[in-house]
Length: 94
Image 1: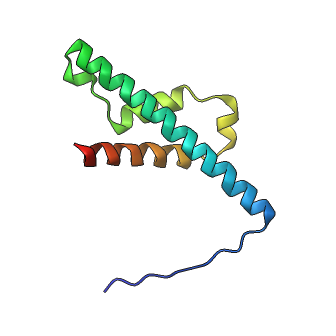
Image 2: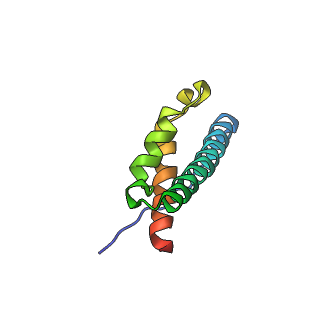
Image 3: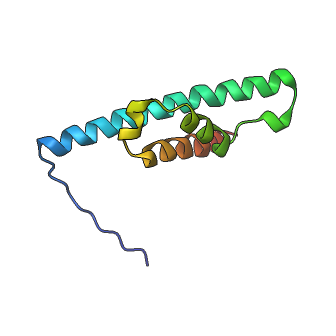
């Protein structure tokens, strides 16, 4: 039997700003990861080398290595989850 708990949040103004900041950062990370993923995929097709194909770890490592200073102030987990969702979507598509 699967049990779930539904909890309704009532965030105050400070929490709403923090949530909005993290939502925007996640969108930014997802779009950046998608751009990186597509670049790696196109490069692997151009070079005709399957070892260059992108995966979750390669894309995440590239994004972490190219982080800007302001990104270190935000949660690293947001970036990890954005890349994971992108990889899951890629697997589901193919």
